[in-house]
Image 1 (cartoon, helix red, strand yellow):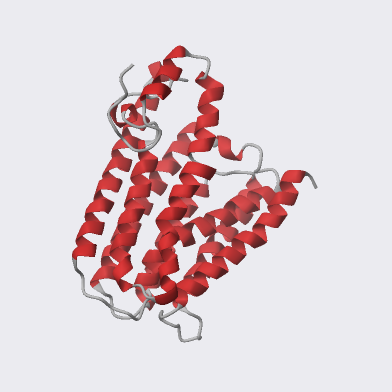
Image 2 (cartoon, helix red, strand yellow):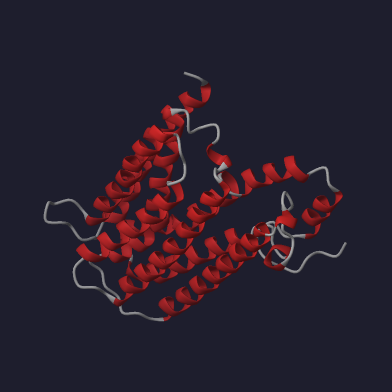
Length: 293
């Protein structure tokens, strides 16, 4: 067993224990199923189980093609489960579930089509042949779903119902802003990559001239909107679930998003003056007008 596999062996129980912890916090003051299991905890079990089941097929075929699609499916399954078993459907729950399913369906289908077109995802080249490392990726996706959904799930499964108010309006507007930015950024990049003349080049127009990662900014923003809508329905330990947008921000800016893409970009274009100039004038995340040369 090499060092990477030993790290995966340590990481797996840490991820699961983190999921248990957030499930406990989100379950406080929440609906309990007929079996006595808190509905929030049941949603957490389902989030991990869906990914582990698909992992079995993915590992046998040494393929990552279903990874992003499974992530989107997990969001949808968990959200529908929470909405269906929570009892009378509250307006806040309907708004939250609509936000989540719309976002998850759009992003999962977009990423699935992209990987089918590209043929492989460089993130998995080294890990998909290792049982432990590949399992860690799928387990982390289960935690990703649970943590990003946490505030919405806590609100949807809470027994504490609050009428819609300013938080719902503001949160919805923030979500619409983030969702719109993410959609436009993804479409601009897809169109850029679809042009053979841009093969092995980097995009630097449209939203990508204002931010090097506008799609990530949009995703962080929309999850802030979800948390704003959910927050009035939370109480006690459920406030811990407001970690959702913080987790998304840390994941995309410190762990698997920007750091990986930055390293890849430096390796591919770091020697080019045009790329260095683009990095110098363009915001890393928050969109703003390019800096003057």
